[in-house]
Length: 175
Image: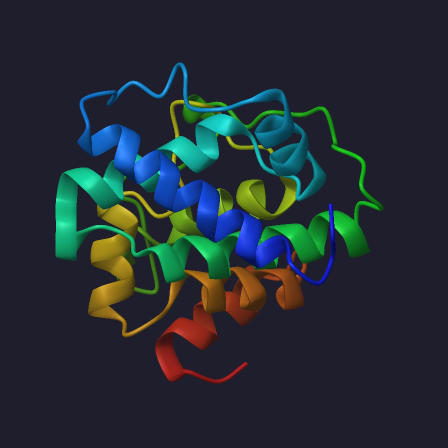
């Protein structure tokens, strides 16, 4: 993988998969070549994480994630994977049962407890295939709070294990 052009590779793969999806292959089982899989692995991504962004982009149109959002989220994950994890996966998966319930609140803010756990799992590459960072519920949260998903990931990274820093950021826009 060329570090200077990884974003171009990501963009081209995304656009190719969108074309396949819109052409009728909405399952994604044949989207990825061995080279595609190696590329995604090199940025700390799984084919399923990539599929989720393409699928929601195609199914929800303007309400779904854009290519740019998918790329920015991938950039944060890639950075975390390379800087914090030294290019090595943790081997852990956060199951849906480990997530706080959807209606859970903190400081009167619904969805935030769940989103914090999901963001940490996304950063660490520990997302269960049945869970998506940036799903419809997450997108509604980000829209309501005028946040970008990639910015939320960066704030989560900077906060470490301190939930209060994330909560305060959501409430004030400052960390």
